[in-house]
Length: 237
Image (cartoon, rainbow, N blue to C red; front, side):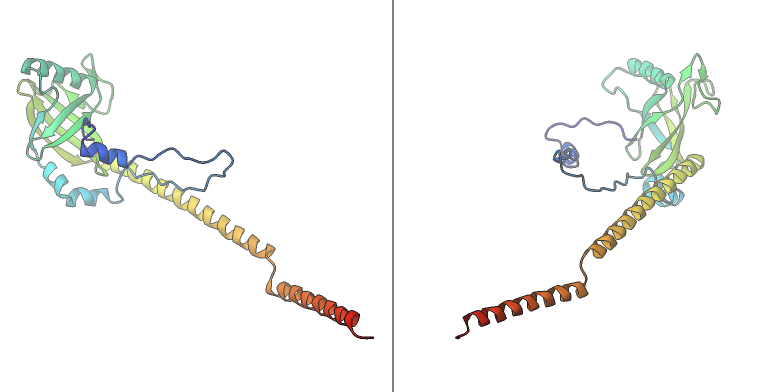
């Protein structure tokens, strides 16, 4: 949920991003592709609540602290006020925790003609308090489902906010994580079963020790017969 950053040619972040890029598969036209098992990076950690309660960053952000609108910093205040309100009505805004410098891109239900598109609650409320807008946004941060909650003054473009652990979203993501791991383990078991079956088939097709001994005995007997014939042919008469 971090805001986008521009990366130039000499930017270390750009170099790191390029280093992590994978080239296209260079498989020949008639070469059979090798079996690959790709495990997608999980969206959440296995124990979200424990991480939220023990992680130092979450512990700091879970306390109500000063926040500030960070969009269009190079523009005049009046223009930034208009852009902030328009962005909130469209369902997005950029917020920063002043104490930690943590920037967040918040996304929530937009406001249309004074009403939100969702009946579950107003995530962008201009009417709750005069001169302020109250916001709520759900997202995943560092593998944990969280909810940003707070308000921003429409004139000063600052306010108060915090992060909360989102229990409902966490249960949904945890169920999806378990299904993902189970599907991966099942594919891995199927692959191992096929490998064992293939090795067993190869061993059945391969001649055993007894067959090899019989073949060697036949070769020795053949060579013995030839030597005897050779000696009989060249023996003095």
